[in-house]
Length: 361
Image 1 (spheres, rainbow, N blue to C red):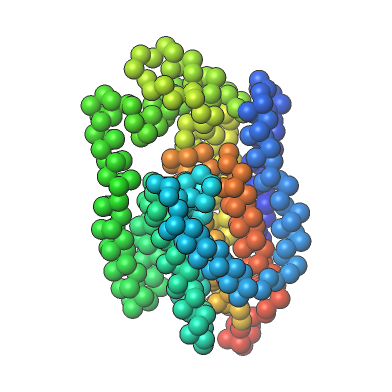
Image 2 (spheres, rainbow, N blue to C red; image 1 turned 120 degrees about the vertical axis):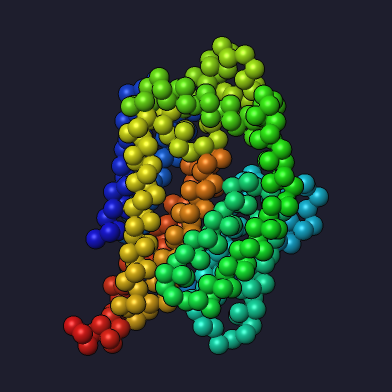
């Protein structure tokens, strides 16, 4: 039954966006946002189709491995300061991190008899993380320790102390390594500059965008200003606020998903955004908890943990970027969540209960 929550949340997110577009002032930017949000509703028939099939998971993981190895090589030979495969560095970094996480979950969940497959997954994971770090996205760099912490908490509650020790050690090493990254050091410097009144930095501009967004939210907290309204309204605030960064109103969003949704659709939009994340989180968590009841429990655990990883990375990344305004980021999120949810549903339906559950029944 929990799958219905996912479908309802996706549909509601789109419906509220349609209403906002029809009722509020219209613009080309607003129309583009509506096209992005409309995908949440349009993907539902695909989910209903996918849950009737079971994809070849080994082939899926091998494809992910080949892609990550290719991206790692491309990043290594690139002359760019932040190599990202001709894609926005933020999207590139977060998506490579998520795909690397898929492989790490596979290594933890499945017992591969072939050392060659294990070696390839480890090799590809390293290449993916290498590409992710080289892109130097703040959201992705922050997501790494957050993922490690989430995994450590789960392993502690599960009682898997051996794997918990490994994850904890890796987490400490990653934190020490990431704090020395140029992007992290620059971010800390930018915070100090902003406190001293200097907003002429990438992070300072974002803080001013947040400030303008809060002002707009206070003006229309319930229904918002309408889709695509941020640029025009934020520019007005910048013009009447001395010292505010010139980048306020330059972009179509305040570089924060929560603030963008509240500016455009108010508290009502915020509720729909929360549901878009809460419903899949609840679905994947419940699937993980009941996975031991099914014969294909390892496969279900893989899809559940990987799905939770997607949501966690997007939650962190959404604090410094508008998630669903970018086609690549938007489509990857929707397709992966729908694919993994459909495969859980399919395996639960077709694999049957394990012998212990059948005996107790």
